[in-house]
Image 1 (cartoon, rainbow, N blue to C red):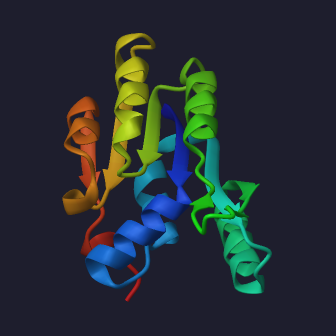
Image 2: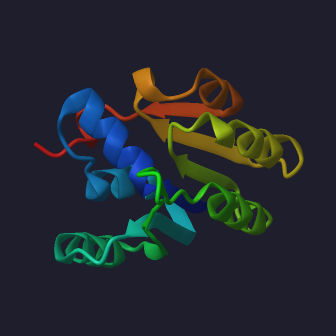
Image 3: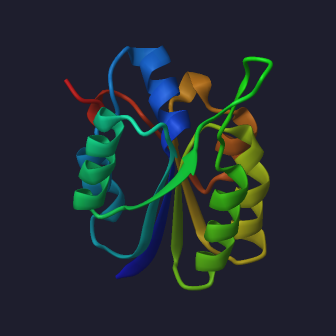
Length: 158
């Protein structure tokens, strides 16, 4: 049985799925697919904390599914822009767990992760699966993965 570590860029998935399909990602269906026949060593969902009750309920659902939820505060800059991405945190955790598993699953369309996926495959010799919305996932990330799994109808809430 392969050992797997799963890393979900919650903000990226939320916005790309909403933009492409005007629906929500089905985390339960994703979990069932990504973990089938595998031993889960680690599963982390990276989110931004705005202190909102609805978000807290969503985070509790993720925990109930099996994810550790890592939160970073939402930062509104004086110029009106916002800060709150987890790229470095996801990268560090994926590299840390790469030695303990056979497969790394990354859920994001962010092209910045292409370097991470390359490293996981080439340096650590692990299988890297990437889930993303096809039309909103960087080509470099799709190319870097052993397998790109599209987020489509099968992984959306009705």
